[in-house]
Image (cartoon, rainbow, N blue to C red; front, top):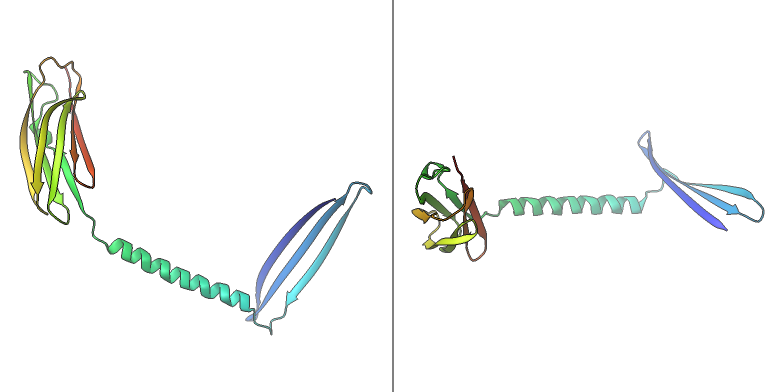
Length: 178
C-alpha cells in the first residue's frame, strides 16, 4: 500500500480578520483492489481565535532580522588591513635590448602595526633577487631592481612573491622578443 500526503496552507485576510486554512489531501493506492482513494479534510481556524504559533514565528523572524542586520553593520564597520605590491609600468621594458632588466617595485603598508616583508624575484621560476624590509603603517617602499637575464629564453615571466606574517602578495610582468 502506497500513501502520499499533500499539505496546503493559506493565510487569508478578509476585512482585517485573518483566517488560516489547512487542507490535507491523502492519496492511497491499493494494488490488490486496483482503485484509488482520495480523502480531503478541511480544518479552518476561526478569525476570533488568535494563532499563537503564527505570532511566535513572526516575532522570531523579526528578532532574527534585527540581529542579522546589526551583525552586518558591525562586520562592515571593521577596518580592513592590507598591503599593496606594484611594479611601476614605466620602470620596465617588455622588450629588453641588453642582458639586464630593471624594474621599480613599490610596496605600501595599510597594516595596523609595523610589518615585516620578505620576498623573492623570479625569472621563469628561477630566483634572481631577494627583498627584506620592515614598514610602519602608511609607509611606502620604492626600490629599483636590476635583474640579470643573460641566458634566459624569451618570453620570460618576471614574478615578485612577497610575504607578510599573515598574507602573500604577487605581481609579474613579461619579457618578450621584438
